[in-house]
Structure formats: structure tokens, C-alpha cells
Length: 433
Ligand code: CMC
Image (tube, rainbow, N blue to C red; front, side, top):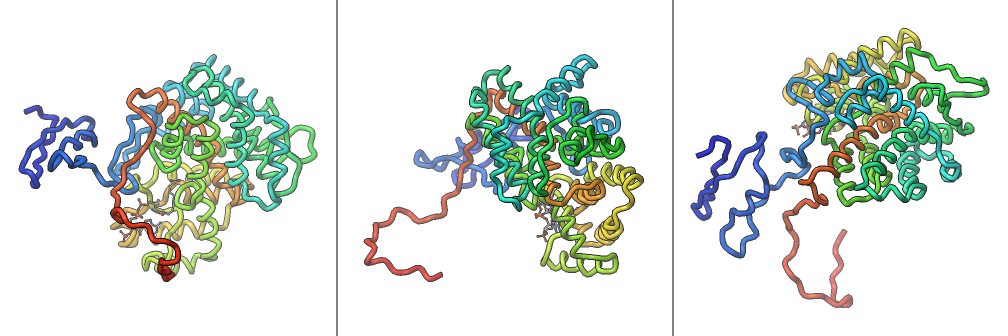
């Protein structure tokens, strides 16, 4: 018998089946042959929240959660954070290789020349309520771009697809900055093509009356590093949304809007904003112990702690912690850092967290750093969405060009009624609420 196989005995029928094992997985469809009789549909797996199901093959991002390893296209995240720029990393994710000098120059030029938004998009944004959350504005405006670029629905045309990818990576900082300016009631700022990706973003956020915006270089570099760290993270909730929605062959604007919607939740990208709220609620170092106690009793969760995949320190959190120190040298130390460090210290020594392998994740320190850099907490998840757009688009492209992929359509285990007689309204009894 071949070594890379799995033999299954069905105790209901005493039949034995042998299925191939490839890359540490068996194909769920190989289980369909396991039946109790001709009327039986065949065996399925039940896996709520995809705890143990691979939905695709991917060559983009590698994570070893037990060892705390993250690599994009084979390059360790620490190396990329030290030596690359975000746009170089976006190129790597999309094309599979680091760009040559000439390729990078062209890539940066292309992205830079797609940062402008159609004036109608500006008007669209003006329609939001003054207090709208920037993430809601971001999601809705990305979706609205689908109406500006109807040709984007030709998702199987490689050149057209790349055009939309460049547009999206170019325009997400512009939309993000406009959502912030709208929120604070300042006029929108147009992009400045002389500036780098992050400098231009800072320009669109913070330029006031000065004729030319000059970004603080240490802040611009720190933001670029944060963008690198957030660029992709394999099949997380938002990326799965991107693949799933994109699998219906909808256009990339609608698919990115769906992915960004998934990111907005507090258990995913929304956690960084929640971390700041949590640190505010704790208030001072001496209250940390009590807060941790409440988390252990199950009343609350420590935001920025725990991860589905990392059962070790999140490598991104390590880099952010280091990078935050560089930022604080320019901005002054965020007083919340002391509360965060104390929280980390207590939690990492506590049996509850040690046993469950709950470590700080990427969101734990990023919020403190963003705040020191001058960002409002409402902007934190938007800051996550900008670089992740490159990851979503890489995964979307990989999905569309994978001959094994089809429209995503999970199965269910039906637990409802069998067929019932219709009851006329006058004969129905009220369901007590
Ligand atoms: N604080 C306290 N207890 C926790 C926490 C936490 N942050 N996270 C998990 N636990 C406990 C959980 O209650 C459970 O305990 P028990 O076994 O006694 O029931 C155990 O640890 C396992 O947790 P789980 O909920 O089964 O883990 P999961 O893989 O389903 O959830 C998570 C992962 C990230 C959603 C969760 O850890 C969490 O809610 N963390 C806080 C929110 C957060 O920081 N999210 C950002 C994630 S990283 C960036 C991103 O993905 O966007």
C-alpha cells in the first residue's frame, strides 16, 4: 500500500477505504464515497469556523504559528521590514519575486499615478454624516468605485485585472485620508506625486495651509514598516471573505469592500481600536491585575491578545514593539505603553494565558504606536486595511488563476424540521418570546 495514504474503516458498514494524503491533507471530496447505502449522500466533514480545513493552495504567505514564523513568498517578515519598502513588498506579494530597480521604479510610478480619485467620488464622500466612522466610509467608498470602473468586472482579462489592482493600491490611501478629513471637518487634500506612498498618505491626512507637506522621515518609515507587517496574513477572516466573494467573479472593488467589512470587526482588524479603549478603561498600571482577573473569569477578553494560528509570540508584534521605541524617540513616549507592558508582563506569567498560549498579537502595540504618531483610534482599522489591500488582491488573483477553484459554497448540517403542513394564520399559536 502506498505510504502517503490514509485507510479509513467505516464501522457502520465494516467497509475500508484508502484515500491519498497530499501536503498533510486528505481531500474532503474523497470522503463522499463513504456511504451506508445508495440513498446516503456520502460522508462530509463538519468544521465550523474552518478550524482544520484548508480551502486553497497558496504560495503567497507562510505562517508557522507554533514557532512564530511569518514569511511573504519565502522572505522572513523581519528581513522585509528592515530592508524593503511597502510598495516593494506589495510587488513581491503580487508577482512572486522582489522587483529589480527598474521594475520597482515603474511600479512606484504606476501606483503613484493612480492615487487620484474621480471628483464624483469626492462628492460621494461629502454625503456621509459628519460623525461617520472612517471604516464605514472606507468600505462604502471602495464599493462605490465599482460604479466608476465598470470594466473591472472582466476579471479573467489579466491586463484589465492588473489595471484595477494598481488603481486599488493607489487609491486606498486617498480614500482613507478623505474619510479622516471628512470626520474632522477639514477640506480634502489631493495627492502629491513627489512624495512616497506613506509620505503622500500623511500629506493627504495632515496638510494644512503650508504650500508643500514635509513628512517627518522617522514617522513615514515607521508607517511604511507597519504597512509591510500588515500586508498579508494568509487565510484570515478578511482574506477568506475576499476569496469567497471574489469566487463569484464579482469585480475587485466589491470584493475588497467585502474583505474590508470583515476586517472591521473587533475580533479581527478592529481589535487595534479596542486595545486603546481597553487601555483607557484600565487607566493606570495598578489596575492591570484586576482587569486580567476579569478576563480570566470570562467577563471580558484582553484585546490584542490571542490568535487562531500563533501559539507563540506574534512576530509582527515583536517588530512593532521595537519600531514603537523608534517612534517614541521622535514623538515622546505614549503613557499607555507602561500599562500595555504591565498587562503583557502579568498575562505572560499567568497560568490562564500560558496554558491557552495567548500572546500579544499585531494589534496589541500597533494602536499605541499609531496614537503616538498622531492617528485617532477610529483610523486604526483603516490603517490596517490600506496595506492589506495588496494582500487581498494577491490572494484574489491567485484564486482566480487557480484551475481547482470554483465558486465558494460550503455545505451545512441541516438541523431544522422535516417537511411540515402549512398552518393558516388564524390557526397559528404565538411563539413566546
Ligand atoms: N482574552 C482572554 N481569553 C482569551 C482571549 C483573550 N484575548 N483569546 C482567547 N481566549 C481564551 C478563550 O476564552 C478560550 O478559553 P477556553 O478554552 O477556556 O474557552 C481560549 O482562550 C481559546 O480561545 P478561542 O476563542 O477558541 O480562540 P480563537 O482562535 O477562536 O480566537 C481570537 C482567536 C483572535 C479571535 C481571540 O484570541 C480573540 O478574541 N482575541 C481578542 C481580539 C483580538 O486581539 N483580535 C486580533 C487578532 S490578530 C489580528 C487580526 O487577525 O486581525
